[in-house]
Amino acid sequence: MIAPKKLLFATAGIPISTQPRDTSNGIRQCKALGLGAMELEFVQSVNISMEKAPEIKKVAEENEIILTCHASYFINLNAIEPQKRGASRSRIVQAAKILDLCGGYSVCFHPGFYLKMDSKKVYENVKAELKKVLEELESYGTKVWIRPETTGKPTQFGSIEELANLSAEFDQVLPVVDFSHLHARTNGKYNTNKEFRSVMVLLEKKCGKEAIQNMHIHLSGINYTEKGERNHLILKESDMNYKDVLQVLKDFNAKGVLVCESPNIEEDALILQKTFLGM
Image 1 (tube, rainbow, N blue to C red):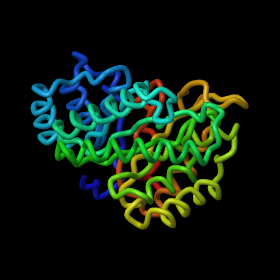
Image 2 (image 1 turned 60 degrees about the vertical axis):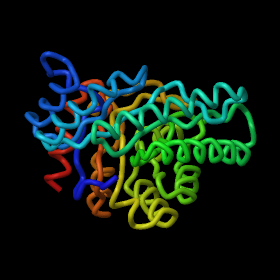
Image 3 (image 1 turned 45 degrees about the vertical axis):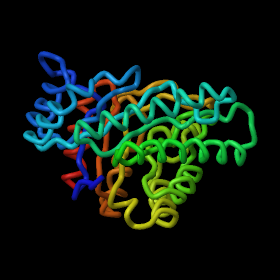
Image 4 (image 1 turned 30 degrees about the vertical axis):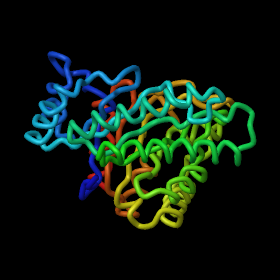
C-alpha cells in the first residue's frame, strides 16, 4: 500500500497502441511511452486469474510501472436486496485480491446509488457494507487501498464531501478523486482553480496530509447534461479545465497516480503528463 513518491500518469487500461493487446504488453507499452502507471480495467469482469497475476506483477516490477485497478461497474453498496449488496462486496473483494497478487496498490469503484433514499441513510448503508469489505480483505491478508470514486451523476452516491467523510472513518480507505465526474455531476461547476483547490483543502482537512501524498485521480474530457455525466471525451473536445486541475495538484505537491480515461487514452495521458511536468 506504499504510494508513489511523485505524481505518476496512467492509462485507463491497455494503451490503444499496444500490439498484441494483452496486459503484459500493455504494461511494456506504458513504459515505452514514458508513462509511470497503468490502471487494470476489471469493469466487466476480473480478467486476470490468480495463476496469471504473479506474471503481471513481474512484468510491472521489471518495467517500473505502478498498477491500480477499476473494479466492476456492477456495484451498489446501497442496493435494497441483500444478495445484490453481497454480490457488490464480492466484486470489490475479488478485484482487490487480484490487484494485490499483481503487485498493485489501489482499487477504484463506484459505491452505489441513492435510490431516492435520504442521503444520510445511504451514507450509513454504504459505510456498513464497506466495513464488511475491509473485514473480508483483512481475513485474506490483502493490503491494498480501497477507493470509492466521486461519481458523475447526482443520482449516484459519491460527492467529494461524502467520500472524504467516509474515508476519514477507515484506515484503508481514501477517495478516487475524479475531477471530470465532479464537473459533470454539478452540470459544469468544479471547473475553476478555486473549486479544484477546495477539493484538495477538504481532502486534507478530513483525511490528513497523507491523502494528498497518496492520491488516486481520474481525469479526462467529459460530456454532461443537467442529469450529469454522459460519456468521456478527448480533452480538446471538452470544456474540462485540466490545466488548472494540474496546477492545483502541483501547488499541493500531490503524489500518487493520475489515470486518464479519455477515449484516446495514451495520447491524452501524455498531454497531461507533459503539461504537468512543464509547470
